Amino acid sequence: MKRKQTHHAPTGPVSTSLPKTLTGIAGLDEITGGGLPTGRPTLVCGGAGSGKTLFAMEFLVRGATQFGEPGVFMSFEERAEELIANVASLGFNLPALIKRRKVVLQHVLIEREQIEEAGEYDLEGLFIRLGHAIDSVGAKRVVLDTIEALFAGLSNMAILRSELVRLFRWLKDRGVTTIITTERGDGALTRHGLEEYVSDCVILLDHRVHEQVSTRKLRIVKYRGSAHGTNEYPFLIDEKGFSVLPLTSLGLGHDCSAERISTGILRLDAMLGDKGFYRGSSILVSGTPGTGKTTIANQFIAAACGRGERGLSFAFEESPAQIHRNMKSVDIDLETHVRKGNLRYHASRPTLHGLEQHLVQMHRLFDEFKPTVVVVDPISNLQAAGTAADASAVLLRLIDFLKSRCVTALFTHLTPFGGTMERSESEISSLMDTWLFMRDLEINGERNRGLYVLKSRGMAHSNQIREFVLTANGIDLLDAYAGPGGVLTGSSRIAQEALDQIDAQSRAQDLERKQRNLEGKRRALEAQIVALRAGFENEGEELLHVIQESQADQRQGLETRRAMATSRKQDNGHPVAVGILAAAPTSPRRA
Image (cartoon, rainbow, N blue to C red; front, side, top):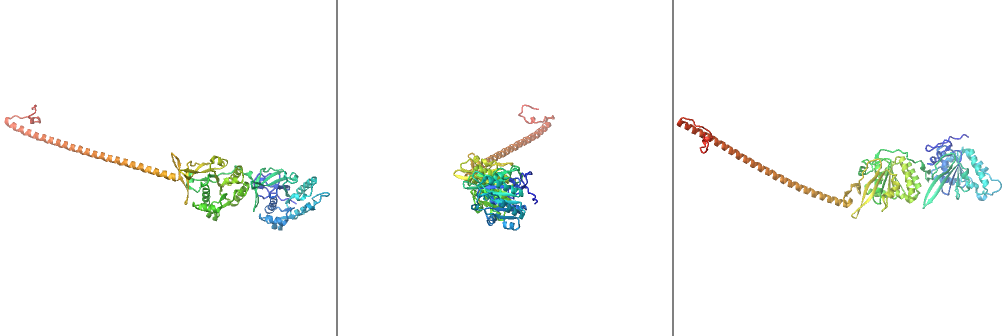
């Protein structure tokens, strides 16, 4: 029978030297570089409850529904009815697939007490039954769950190894891509310690519990003929199936946007170059308890939803109902955005899952809701589900993922009382593009809030402290009073402003008084000038009068002398000299 063309992964380092079959399991095909080896067996091992059966079943169902590859599931423990009921919670409709001849589900009962080791032991009966099932639907995929049941009563290790090799060789000869599940042994990957050596690919599923917090992780132990991811990858099993987070695919090759979006607070936008945050950037809002970190976060996401964008909020401290009630007190309406479908919450305690589980769940919610802005409040609580180093590693992966999607993310971080800012956030601050710090300003027995921008990459920003005020009408940023005694806020600022106002009024009154004195002097001077001018004019008029009288006297004297001269000429017949001096008989000079 001609084998159907294999499917190649759309992303990741796909190997061209080894044919691979896509699993359809989210994230796994990227880690394996294209899926599982085509026509070869893959061993999936793990402890009880690690997800081996669900992993194998999803591989089979995805192949039948997404890639047109029928499959056979042969169980040695669970009955067919039990398997159908167990996977129905994942949305897998096995009866419909069986009816359409896409899947064959068989249960082979092997009771250990019925097995007696005598003579030669072989798996010919299994090969016949499995071969018939494969031929009946033209299966390309096969699952054997679990292999321990086949050799439960077999103690001869030589025979065990020989039959394992025969089983794996038979599956290869049939050209079916196979998953074989096996239980994990003590100090070994498998109970017998042989299966991993004859398998071409070995995947280890681990379900660990640390400090009462469970975490599921996957690791590719072995993959012949292909490069693959070697790290431990978190995976999640929920109502949508099995999903793996391929962490190693996240790097620094993402694009960046020059678009700016508002913070939702006008004066904060002004502090950030009058334009707000860069789209796709990561923002950290840190501070001590009660400084308003959550309020800033919700104002930001409310403003984004008000512009028609989608916002996703991860709340690790409060329920959505509590957030809505608290934000109403500062005139932030979030319920309207939830009803319109622009805002979604995911509220849970950090200890509900391990850190990796939270990360996988976040990835899934991003893919479902496709938000443009995200709020995580607070990231400091994630340390309750692991160590500080683990929380930082998860945050790094989350930020890289968000940047690759150009999602603007705002994170809040709680700074403990008495802790220095630099030490508290040193592990995460370098990951952030913008860092807003909220601090307490305690003066004269009063506690107030202050805000300033510690850093904001790629933009000019204010270096001034602003008083952060929450009122019934919303958020306001006030200019903090900076004087010789330092920064004053609250009632101290109001009192100081009142004193400044009184001082300003006093200075204004003193200036007004001086202006009045100067005006009085001006008027007095002008009066003196008027008096002097009047005196001058009087003296001028008097001098003119004197001159006029003098001139009149001179004319009168002249006329008199002329008359006298005329009179003397008549007496002796001789003319008399006429002049001014002739009219002055007292003068010693005569004409």
